[in-house]
Amino acid sequence: MWMTILNYFYPVTDSYSHRPEHLTATGGFTDITSVMWLEPHGYTDEDTCRPFLITQTKASAYQNRDSEWREGARQLGEYLHALSGTKVKRKWFWGILAIGTEVEFYVCNRYDDKLNCYTERLDVERDAQAVRRFLNEIKSKTK
Image (tube, rainbow, N blue to C red; front, side, top):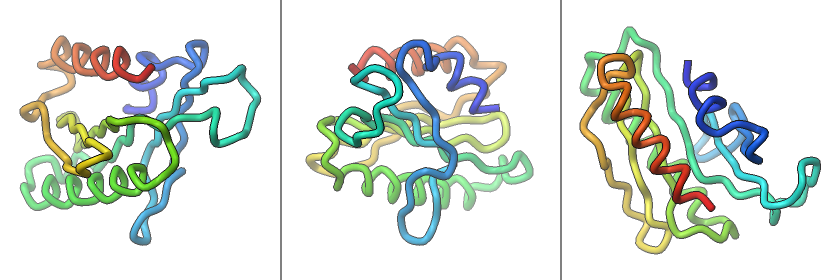
């Protein structure tokens, strides 16, 4: 579900790409790493590609388990921390933790390395307008 949502809001035609299991940290892989290309398509130089968003997903069976939300946030924090240690020239990194149809949005400042949840838990269908607003807000800050 999230690959479809991400491709809609951040399309390849606008120089975005979404990479499954791209980044590693503490023995695991990110579910989806979203990047923005700064050069024409086809360049492979890491300097022309800026990661900006990590999406961590879990199965809907775990949606009502607080322990899964805590663990997902911990994993997301580790992945965003790994991004902060790269040469990527970006102050802010964003994160999405999605379990089933619910989602939380996070932001991480690379200079103080703090992970902050900046939304309450949202339902993708019921709170679609808020989900769209946060995805568009992230997009407006990724330049």
